[in-house]
Length: 468
Image (cartoon, rainbow, N blue to C red; front, side, top):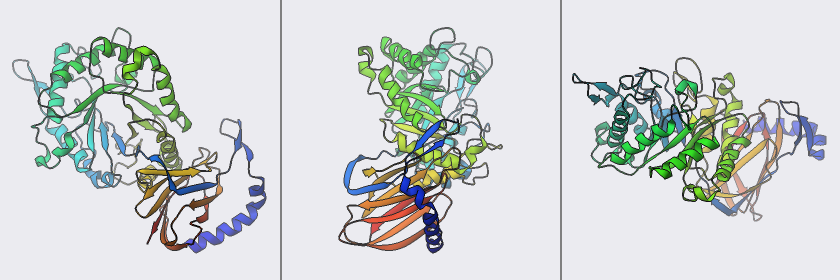
């Protein structure tokens, strides 16, 4: 397989040589703007550590697709291969019929359906991250899932009971097989409260999210016999300045528990993900926010498009995912939840189809797992081609991606690893399209390995070089 690729690459290079000699070129992007293209020349210094490499990609989100259905049960094995740390779920009250009333009209809670979903999360190796919502119809002032409660004390009680259930010291779930994973569970107040679909709450007045947060925090405060857990929000559709600042001021004024800030981010421009963090840092630069600047930041949903998009089924979205992660690992970000794990009956955002078949985005996330926890120096990224590199046992690993939303840019990338110990190494390559192979290479006294990577549009390759 490698011989065919090498023959093709040789011919391609001869044809491309005039372009390579010129180097920088100018093209038009999808909006028609002139774009100066800088070609990549990836150089990794295996013996120069630059710091920890956060595995930001190992958090996943599952939306509400089918009421009463265990969306993760049929795909636990596939999900576990991604080694997730946390899995976020929403619709926890309405999809699992948690709340009802007894003959006297008092609230009663039934956790069996939600317990099963949580057990599927735990079985995958992850911990649960709950989006607290939506409003149980029996509690809602207008009988809808997005109304305000008729009695705010009932919402407070529901949040208290939820936390005591899933962060309780004495809680027994799944035959007590995974209860060690119930430390550090996250509870996020609502989901996209600014969106019409989910209630069109306001951060100012009227249908006031601050009031929703107040009674959620009071419920969390009253929870007893619990392990450590975290409460936060506002889980808006983007990082809105007024929502973040006003929530902090309100929590500070009423001494409310606020353990993290969260929002969502969708978009084709991978650079924009890093802009979120810079904006939040700017918004919290005033002295009144000093005590809250170090709050963990969480992007609790992210992806290529907030609407179902056929491109999400393609290599374009997979390369977008890997390239976005390249930017996100630079930021002081606690977690970023890729949305979503499994499709409903109709194809949507899933990295897995409804029948459990992996899509390109799934394979992109899986390729990232070749990376270790210690980042090493990498230089020479270009306009389209980005990369990450890390130390692994007895060697070094890297992931290289060529993201182009127009699906047109091809590049031959010089790829070099310096600082290796002389000796015999096993070289493993795996591409997004499933092509993979292993060869042995000998590193001489120069301590250098080099090759040329033929990067087709929206291709991703994972490379591991381990000393034998």
